Length: 219
Image (cartoon, rainbow, N blue to C red; front, side, top):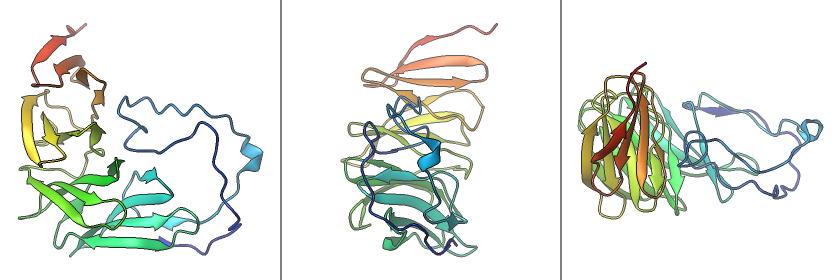
């Protein structure tokens, strides 16, 4: 469960030149956390505080997306970035754990853990309506947010030993490939390839079919 401290300095928000959405872990599909903007730290002040949200958030089009859970229920929530008022909340029932969300092309995606509830989920970013679900076995709450590019999402499964490509239009699995046994990784994705660094090795997979194109040798 999350709580929101009373807002301060609730003034008109102005766009920051060069700053766009924060779509997933490390900001974007390339996972480089790059924001081409110049800021002055002296101009920052606290606006509000959201407590007990699950790790990372995603941000797009004036909304903050996050996951939250109690011992009996998990939910994905959208807050207004102006004052943290709740735009929508979608319950995922008895999910034991939720990973952080990603946002892309008007949709919110995340993975969950739970009997009958574990898997990959998609929601409408404007309303919270569920759009699709793919069951995934052996999920963990230590995963980062999905990485989404075009209509493909890339997620960790089987306790971080496998990467899976999921079609976000049909909610079907495109391909699955092992990536070693290190958890906590997050793939970087460009137009042609998905990149994963685990167990001291950099692995590169073709986006179209998941076939490995090359792998570095250990030192």
